[in-house]
Image (cartoon, rainbow, N blue to C red; front, side, top):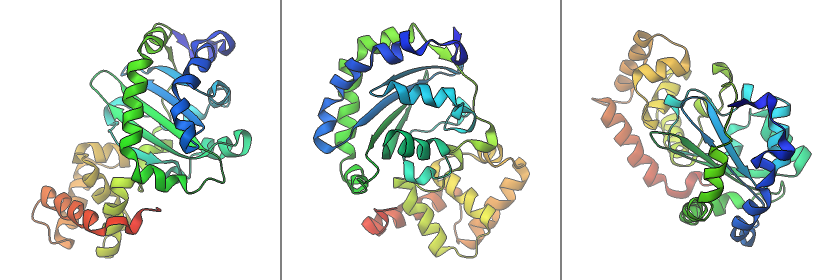
Length: 267
């Protein structure tokens, strides 16, 4: 299996399949979604990429953005949706805007036992209103993903025969694991922030990861803290939020988030 540094992009399926991917992605043009990519990561750090813009992928690896990117340990991946604007510290997204005119994107992440799919949708830098479209039409994006997986199955199979490997991002630079802002989590996080001003920054981060479904052990790993320290933070959070258990804490703020409705729809 080739390493990313060894790939000849002009002959690799990332480039040779681009015209077919653009055909499959044609329904997105109706909504001015001009960029689509699928990145599939496997537990052994191997990967496949299918995209409408192969030069973007080449740029990503040429400048080694994977050392500061979205991909950390496979076991820590979760099925979530990430607005690019919430990963504002990821330099590659800024580069996409400035060098390729691609911006205002969303990543829909779906994890299974054998791989994790990252579906990327994006538009032009001046199309800010697309965020509202994402929020109100997730069902459409989900349907498109299913269509793509079905109609693009043969291309995916070919790509899996030509997988490549690249290193994980440095733990301290992983964006997804360090992001405290996202659709279903945004409202919970802001609810925590607004209703629990007495929480310390560390406690707020722990509460956020609890709401995402992470265990204390996983949180300790993400935050580079000892398991005992995280448990102390959680105990303090429960006390300050008047929650008897971690499950009640999550339920409380999930309910609060749903009641907040569209208050944070432009986050």
